Length: 151
Image 1 (tube, rainbow, N blue to C red):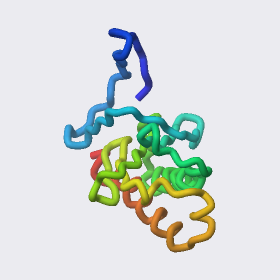
Image 2 (cartoon, rainbow, N blue to C red):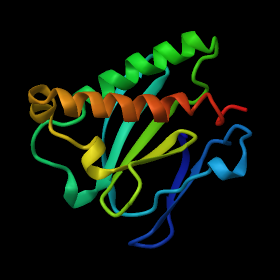
Image 3 (cartoon, rainbow, N blue to C red):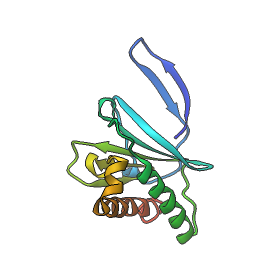
Image 4 (spheres, rainbow, N blue to C red):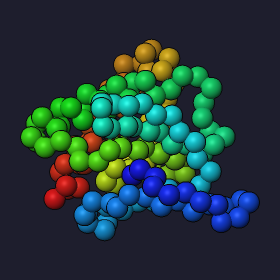
C-alpha cells in the first residue's frame, strides 16, 4: 500500500505508516521485513508490480522483463475473465532463497522461491521450459488473487 507517513525514530530506524488496507481475511496478511531492494514496473495506470530481494542479491544482469510482461497480461486476462478488476494499487513479489515452497499467494504480496521468479532475461529468452514454468507459477498465484483472496 502507499506510504502515507515516514519519520525517523533514531539514526538507524524509522517508522512507516501506510494507507488503510481494504477488508480481507486475516490469513491473507503478509509482512516482509528486512534489508530489501526492488525492481518495479508500472503495469497500467493504477497498478505497480515489484520484485523484492535481499539488498545484496539483485543480479547484475537485466531481470524482470518477462515476469512484468506476464503479470500485465495475466492481470488483464483475469480482470476480464472474472469481470472484476484487480482491487489493489500494487502487486509485490519477493524472491526468497530460504523457502521450500515454489510460491505462496497472499493478497498483493506473493513469496517465490528465488530461482523461480528471479531469472535473467537472457536465460528466459533461451529456454522455453523456463518461460512455461514461470508463466504457470505466475498464472496460479495471480488467479488466486481472485479465487479465494477476494471472497
